[in-house]
Amino acid sequence: MTKEFVVKKLVFNKLAKIMSDIKYKVIVGLEIHVQLCTKTKMFCGCALSFAQQPNSRVCPVCLGMPGSLPVMNKQAVEFSILAAMALNLEIARFTKWDRKNYYYPDLPKNYQISQYDLPISNKGYIEIPLESGQTKKIRITRAHLEEDAGKNTHTSGDYSQVDLNRAGTPLLEIVTEPDMNSAEEVRALAIELQRIVRYLGVSEADMQKGHMRFEPNINLAITKDGIEYRTPIVEVKNLNSFRTIERSIIYETQRQLDEFIETGKTLKMGNKSTRGWDDDKQMTVLQREKEEAHDYRYFPDPDLVPVVWTDEDLERIRKNLVELPIEKRKRFIDNFGLSSYDAGVLTDEKSLSDFFDEAVSAGGDPKRVCNLITQTGLKIANEKGCKVNELGFDAKALAQLAKMVEEGTIGASSANIVLAEMAATGQTPDAIAQAKNLIQKNDTAEIEAAVEAVFAENEQAVDDAKNNPKKAQKALGFLMGQAMRKTKGQGNPKLISQILNQKLGI
Ligand code: ZN
Ligand code: MN
Image (cartoon, rainbow, N blue to C red):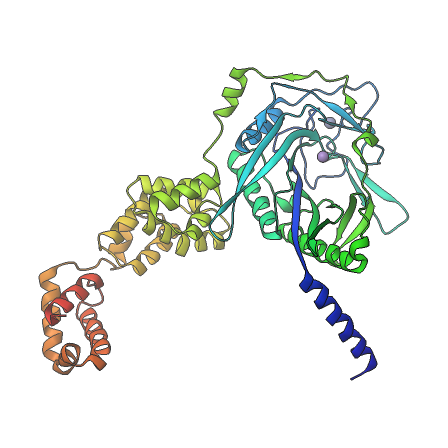
């Protein structure tokens, strides 16, 4: 044993001893920015853009030219209200715009138009599905509307580039209470929120395009010798993938735990700090001690009038609310007896859940329709790069196919072949089943005759099936196979099995 190894082992043992003495809980709250899919920016007529020629989607307003005046995008405010309603938030009747002042090259006005003390909404919650099949309510503090900044690109040379195409893009900022206690819960919230805004049609919520950006506030409640300690809160900035959200929380948990163990009870209750995620090193890096609200010198924007809502306005917006993914998921489980997993797959996208609903309304057995979609439909759609409802057959045709399986006209595995053909040719399931010779024989007399013929040819197997417990199972399988063959593979297996058992008297 080398000396170095012995030392490491001692340190490890000491750590293990400390670890066994302490308990800890992760505490996470989120700040989330969601880009709304309006046609134009928040306060000017410029089109929203992604990957366009830099500085080609700009005008005097979003360039912050002197003398230019902002005009509020009504659609953006209505989208925000709709999202706030879906998040069970209380909608403010009176709301105003504030300037958040700071200097940065991507912010040409030197202030961001945001909302400070009178946001569009307060006090709501989002219900998230957990792995266990349970759900959890995460409280939402507030949601407000603001404009995005431009984008700085730091080159390898001794200069940076500024692209202001994004400046002025409408953002819904959602702030949650610190109600999440694991990376999994945070991930579940991120995914559920993405589903909700897509269901509502207020955001494309494309993570890769930066449409949703997450900033987890993470700290730990550590209990040692009966005393609870709280580590200082760390805010991790600007995460735009589910993977980095999860990893940064796991990393911070370990880092804060290590820091606590090193400093022990002398842990300094420092200020909240801001860290960034370094994806190459897979770790968070200290950026700065957290600034306070008063650093921004918030004050009401004198160029914009407050927004006042009437009951009629809010009722009109509320009409655009749709059944939310979690409600749909519960309905699919409760009313149709689907598994939580299947219900999750079917409700991931609104278009798919609607297609499923339509097929069930058209008379398709829910479980059959679900199997056809999840076993074959999604696979073909994935290969073709489209959605299931774009495969070339409608929900009625899918319901028809499900009925054919239910009635024993075709077998369950044949149905998948028929579905693939429906996607390829757009023909009806019936025509395809006929043409491909997949219609099952359900003629009892014919099947009885086939079974009798099989019995006559295989006396030993019949005897084993009836009288030899050791061989019965195998003999039965053999007789089943022979009967299927007698019907040229077209006998309804369920019916054959019934008649076999009946005739064998088992
Ligand atoms: Zn503009
Ligand atoms: Mn913000």
